[in-house]
Length: 52
Image (tube, rainbow, N blue to C red; front, side, top):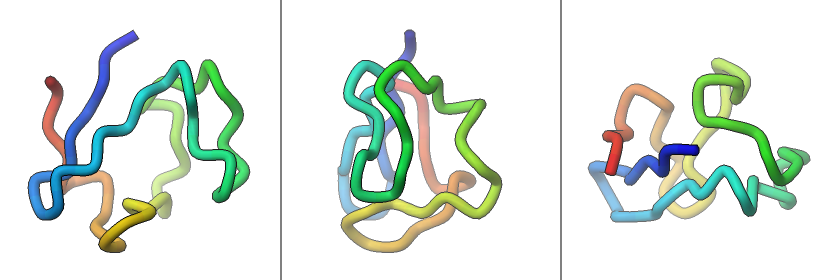
C-alpha cells in the first residue's frame, strides 16, 4: 500500500498503521479514508497530501 505525506507539515499516513486516534483501522488505504479525514498533526484535508 502507498504512503501519503502531508504537504503542509510532513506527516506521513502509513496504511499499515492507520490512524487509531481517528478510528481508522490498520490496513486502510488512503483512498478509503473518509472524505472529511484530516491530518492528525495540522488538520489539513486529504487534498493536501501527496503520494510518496
